[in-house]
Length: 370
Ligand code: NAP
Ligand code: FE
Image 1 (cartoon, rainbow, N blue to C red):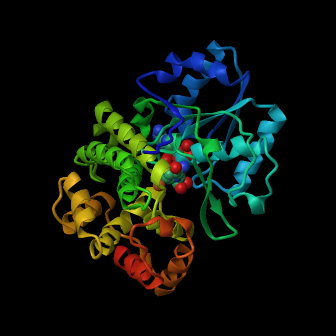
Image 2 (image 1 turned 120 degrees about the vertical axis):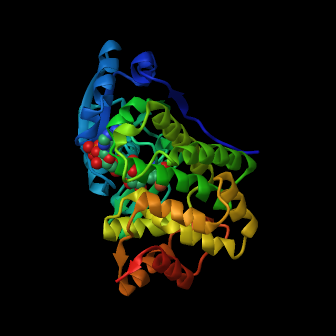
C-alpha cells in the first residue's frame, strides 16, 4: 500500500470562520488569489477576510484569475506576491483560481523560466497554500496539480509536484448556493470523470478504487436532482454537500492515479472550442468507455454497476440528459485534436492506450461532425 495525501481537509458549515486560528500557522501576510466576481458574491471572500482580521493577519488580493488560467496570469500573480512579501497564498474559487494559486505559490519563491515551467524539475521552496473550493468538481483542493493554458503547445498542461499539495483545504457547501445549474452540472461531471478515470488508470490501487467507488456513489445519487431544465435554487444544501464531498474524494483519487486519455482529449475541446472543462470530459466519456469495453468488459461493467447502470447506452443517455446538444467539430479538428492528445502524458496512464486512429474515432462519436 502506498498512498500520499498531506492536505488537512476540514468540511463543515462556516469552517473558514471557525478555523481561523489555523491560518496563523502560515504567516503574517496572506495573498488571496481569486476570480473577478464569484468569491465576492458567494460570501467566501468576505468570510476569509473576516477570519484574517480576527487573527490579525494582513492580506492583499489578486483577483485577476480567468477561467482556464494562462501562464501570464500566474507570473503576474507571483510578481505581486513578491512585491507584497506574501508569506502564504489562499486560493478561493473554482479550479481556475485554486490552480493559479498553486502556481503562484511556487513562482513567488522560485525563479522558473516560462519554457521550463512544465518540465517537472522544481526546487524545494513554495509558499504554504490554503484552498477554498467554490465549485464542486475539480478536487484541486486536494491535488498536486496546477493546470494552465499553454499557448506554446496549444493545450492545457500541468505543473505536477507534491510541493503544491495545499496545507489546508476548507470546504463549505454554502458557497455553492450561487452556482448556476449549468456550472453545477459541468463541475459534477468533471468530478465523475475523475472518479471513473481513476479506475481506468494504470496507477489505480485498492485504496484509490475504494475512494473512487465511494465518490461515484455520492455523485451519482445527486445526478437525479441535476437537469438543465431545473433551476439551481431547487438544489438543497444536502445535495451541495454531497457534490462537494464526492468531488473532493475524486480529487484524492486523481492525486494518486492521475487522469487519463479523457482529460488529455478534453483539453483540446477547451483550448480550441472553448468548451467548459467538465463538459468536455462528459462529452467524451461514453465513447471512451465503449472503447475500453472492447478490451476490458469486466472493468466497465463494474463501473456501470457502481453507478446503478447496466449498459453504456444507459450511461450515454444519462450524460446526454445532463449535457444537452453536442457541439460540432470538423474533420480537420479531429485530426488536429487527436494529434495533440496522442502526445499527452496522461494518455499512457490509461489501462488501454488508444492509437491516433482510435482517438479520432472517439472524438467523432462524441461530437457532431460538421
Ligand atoms: P472555474 O474556471 O474555476 O470557474 C468557472 C466559472 O464559475 C467562473 O466564471 C467563476 O466565476 C464561476 N464560479 C466559481 N464559483 C462560483 C460560485 N460559488 N458561484 C457562482 N459562480 C462561481 O471552473 P472549474 O470547473 O471549477 O475549474 C476548471 C479548471 O480547473 C480548469 O482549468 C481545469 O483544467 C482545472 N482542473 C484542475 C484540476 C486539478 O487537480 N488541479 C482537476 C480538474 C480540473 P469567477 O471567475 O468570478 O470566480
Ligand atoms: Fe478535471
